[in-house]
Image 1 (cartoon, helix red, strand yellow):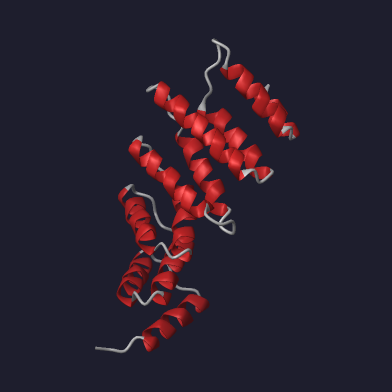
Image 2 (tube, rainbow, N blue to C red):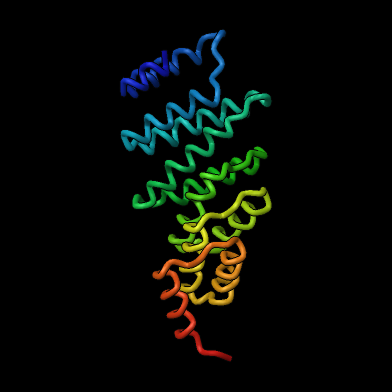
Length: 195
């Protein structure tokens, strides 16, 4: 029933039904239901609702050691990170990642692909690099937007050594810079005096 209401777009009805079902002894929510509800809340841009439901989910997870909501965690991070134009939400996404880390959950590749550029563009370069390293350690292959955002953001921040290391690594993965990225790299190199 929750799924049917969500497809129709009755987010409030879906949440009411979900909360009613949770009070029943026979119902145990699963990862898919939380993902569906987070998606519905995201469609109506109810980021407070996403955070509130996320906190409910965390309580549920902490009350039952056998439950894992890894996909739901990743989905919340994705929705909040995509809301980067709204003050503070990318930082909330990073806080949620930290709760996942404490619960020994991992990010999926699409969440890395979203979070790294988001963190790099918002100036959280050390966090972006941490995710970048973690992604590679888990066997995920970084894509061009990840490399591009790191090279560009590091260069703009004056961290030319790191920018060039990431650029060289990008080439090692067989990726070539776009014309825009190449011009950016060239301008970073000209702006930093040689020692």
